[in-house]
Image (cartoon, rainbow, N blue to C red; front, side, top):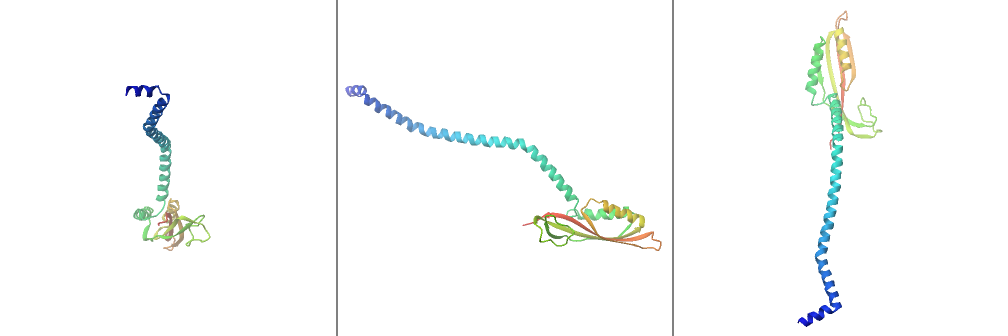
Length: 204
């Protein structure tokens, strides 16, 4: 047996067989590790990309938050300038107080239900029907009709009309009827029809 080992070791072809077998055995164990290494490298690269995106997003986040806050404030400001279901009671109370503070007597106040129509680009809110020639938007126009009548001294009524004109609501005076209630014109009666507008997103 020892002689066979000596002969095998002295044979150069035998060494080639040993080397080849060793390499083959090494590949069997190393190749899976190489695959694992490549997979880890790819995963590391993906994580690095995601981390870079996250860091970039983090740098941009304060700017986004500022712009979001500005847009939210603007939207809320515009919302406060409209007459809607959320502030109708507040609106009624404000009208009653405005009339009383002016020294006039409120005889009638009616707030109608909203009437909606489609809203288009370059549209006119005073048009009751949608112009089919316009390009539609994702919004619809809501109009509320408010009618009120009151009486009082002519100077007080004039100041009240000025108060309506200075009101920051999105309003249009549709009709105004003013007539004297006394022979000397010291007291007058006023009837108003007001249109209040708001834009609302279309619902699916």
